[in-house]
Length: 417
View: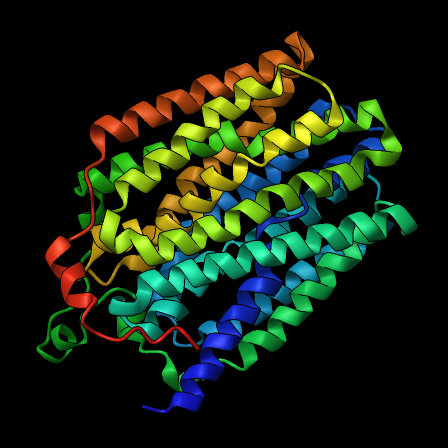
């Protein structure tokens, strides 16, 4: 075993997750503030642009997963996608029309659809299934650290240079992610393992399962619905908070939105680490239920006060829900698709479902805000989150194979770096 190469690959994955953190999630609330404050767009138009970008990502998530399953140029795909996101950020200050903003954000969203399955595939291909739980927790920990750092810098730069500075910051992080992925050794990635296929089966002449097999995987389908409802409830909450902050004090809107993000990321990092270290001992479902339970509570708490610091404080709870969900998603999908060779396309398909929820979330919230106000919108999303929690509790089984996990603990993980 080449310890030096292992360390380099692990540190490169750390850097990739750190720099892609803000890039893979998109401009989100920062774009909302920019359009609201600079171009005076109404909430419904802002929600529509974000919905269109979400739909663009939605229709490419599953093909992106299939591409990652088949491709042996995973690093190149990540680099090309990062360059497209960079271009989309750099042109935003020079365009003003609804059409061009929608087009650029849609292209960036399409490019960004490859990041999640690519990172999961590269990680699984390097570490193998035995160390994947710990590597996933480490991925998410660095992802949240990157989000926190980017949000702090966004708040500082927007305070000094205005909201447009956020676009240049994201472009820089996208370029930095290209350098990070270039240091991952191409030879270290086992492409059969990276797609969830046992190499021994490949040698014996067996092939990955057909895509139709995924449609008969009931636990996977139910879990996908739960994920869709979770993001339908979650995606618009921070955007609505940023809009409320803009109405309270426009000069503080971006810095306080950054504070909301940093507050959540500070909590997400240790939650992701906890998942990485304990998910093989405690199981996936208890941790998932804890994350899902927080979301309806958060939606209700937002309506209790318009105080900016209360809103930032409530956002801390997002760290528990999103931190657990982000680290557990690839683990549950790996569990449910083990041996099929369809890990990344399944991850892409589930990302499509929750991408649909996220895309509809901003549009739904915008319509409710127009008709009944922000409090009604928060309570509507809280009710949807409650449905997702009940469905997860009742209809999704524990996916951890206890005997397999016990075997895994006897094998040294390759991720400590």
